[in-house]
Length: 169
Image (cartoon, rainbow, N blue to C red; front, side, top):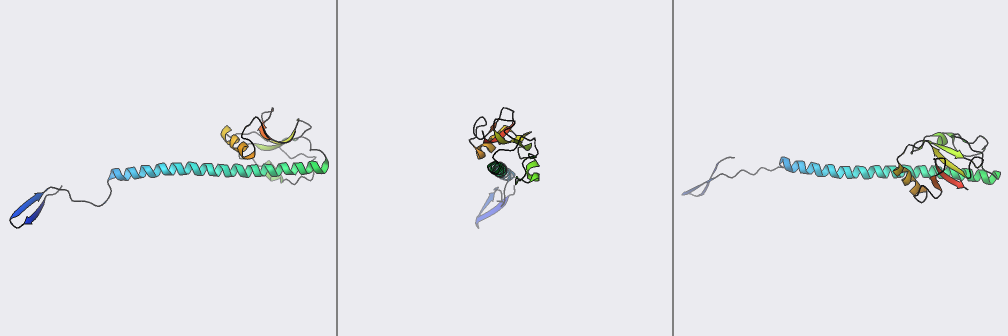
């Protein structure tokens, strides 16, 4: 705090103790701005992560749909669905236009694709063996594919505990 002598009239002297005005921000103002920016960044990151997850789940649903169509085409040509197989593509399903690498790659929900043929089950479907994802992500996937309810619809948790996309019952 400085003392400034201000002269108003030649015969009058006034002493002012006012602080000189600095241009800039105080530490408190800067801290408030940083907190606000941090909150906005946290909201944006959460939205971005949700967007990425939804797009990945949509891609997974598209892949599952392509697999299901291939099995349906195979059934139309041959008159029956191939026998049940575990994780690998059914050995008796020659002519399936499914890339082995795509089939054997781990899914976004964890685990691997699995063909559940009608010789072992009361349905023909594609399940995911070894799911490790949170229930919330599985429900999101079900919402993209179906009705969002894991006990009904085409995608559901079957009696063997697997999440299965039912092609035909």
